[in-house]
Image (cartoon, rainbow, N blue to C red; front, side, top):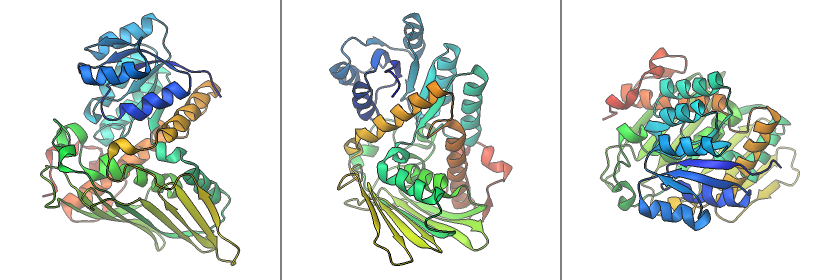
Length: 358
C-alpha cells in the first residue's frame, strides 16, 4: 500500500468524519484545513491536532503547497467543487473530491478537464464501490457469472429527519443541485452505472413527501432503457421511515445477484449453492448520515493512492464519475419534462438549477 499523504482539507462539514478516520488509519497527516467553524475545526483537531486552520481555501492551499503537501481533499458543498479543484490544481496537488463531482454535467466536465490539463490525479468519493460486496459483484460481472444482464432494480428506501434539511443551505437546488437523487441515492445509482454502463434513454418522476419541508425532491423514480429489451428501475427516497438498506438486484440469463447494503448473494441458475459475501450486518446511513462506515472511505482512499502512484485510473476516477453525473442529469430532465430523455441530448450539459420539476 502507498505511503500516507500530507493532506489539506477544503471544508470540514458532515462528510468529514469518515474521511478523518480513514486518513488516520492510512497514516496520513492533515497539515491545513479551510473552515470558519470552531465546532468543525474541533472535529479535525480531535484526529489531527497540528492541522493549521484558515478561513479561506486559498490560504489553506497556500500553506499546503508551502509545506510540500500531496493531496487536497475537497469536502465543500457541491456547487463549489469546480473552484476548489481548480485551486488545488494551481498548487499542483492531487485531489479526492466528495461526490457528486459538481451540480451540473457542464461543471463536472470542466472539473475533470481542469485536473487533466494540470496533470494532477483525481478520484471521487463513491465509496460504495470499495465495499467488499460491491467489488465482489463487479468481479462476478467481469467473469460473466450471471451471463447477459437483462434487468436491474435499484431501491434506496432511506430516511432523513427534518433536522437534516434544517441545516443552512442543505436541501437547496443552488447548493446541492437537487435532493435525494444527487445527494443520497447517487451512491447506489453510481454502482448501477459502474456495473452496467449508462442507459440509452430515461423516463422519470420526482416529488416531495409531506414528511419534510424542503425545496428539493425527497422521492424519485426512474426507468432506464438500455435497449434490446434491457432495462433498470430506480426508486429512491429520504421519506421512507424508518429507513432500510439499499439494494441492487441484477437479473442475468445465467443467474441473479442481490446486493443489499453491505451484503451480496449471487445465485447461479444451475442450482449450485449461492455465493455469499458479508461485510457487516447493516451498511449504516439509512437514517443517520453520520452512521456510514468509515472503512469504505479508507479502502477507497488506499486504492486511489495506489492508483496515483502507479499512474493508472483509480477505482472511482473522474471519467467514470462523469458518466454517473450524466445519468443523474438525465433523470432530472426526464422528471421535469415528463418525456423520455436520451443520454446524448445536449440539453443535459446545461445547469438545471434554475428549473424545478414541480
